[in-house]
Image (cartoon, rainbow, N blue to C red; front, side, top):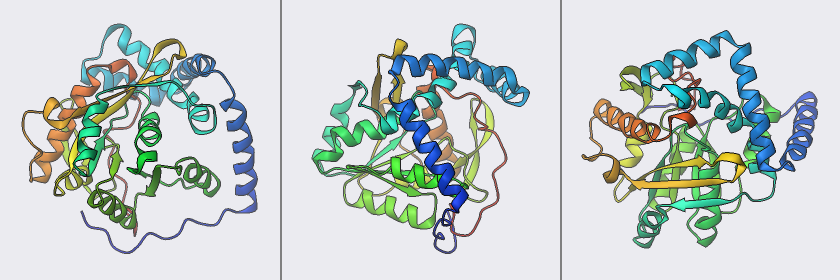
Length: 307
């Protein structure tokens, strides 16, 4: 991966951006008071409204689910689940704590006990916003924080909001920039945790084409680079959304439990391995994957300082 220049500071919010940001904050805080079952019910309906109203989204969803072989009730359930993923955000960001269970937390405990850096690879599956927050609440407060990578919004007011909600005790968020990658590297060297969404499409020049459910998808090389840092423990994790607003379960598995071979040094081979590992997670709960995400799109041009 190559990038030139440091990332520029985000633009200062305009008066209009500040007003929009304040209005959005008030709306989110009001939605955050809703019971989680209500948020999920409204989100389910919203997911279907978007599916019905957007021919482009509907066509992409149909193609992606067909390529992945998703059929029956799980295919249709993914429409409502996509809306739930949006509707639950205010509660997670500003509301009272939600119920979170764990499956595989012992793998995290073991890695931290050895003072090893931990790399979490999480697909767009279930509630991927809850996984770093749950980690921060359980492990970050004990002196093992997590650093997550996020893509800054082009809207200054919204970007300020996102940066605020993603910075908390035990959790830090860094932008998709050269400076952000350096902070990820530093966190791993300190024996801390780092979280990535490796099925997010990177800018042009920072990925390779690798199969994802049998079709070429532009795949980031950053995940493999971080995984190959000395002593790093790679864990696959995702947040299962329980039915009827009963909360979530964070599932954690070591790489070796999902894939037979270690991550390769070759970039294209490593990207294909990571995609296959994500497929195996998604195949366990296809109803909770964001099939409407433009996973197979052409990468955008690389801007100065971005990754």
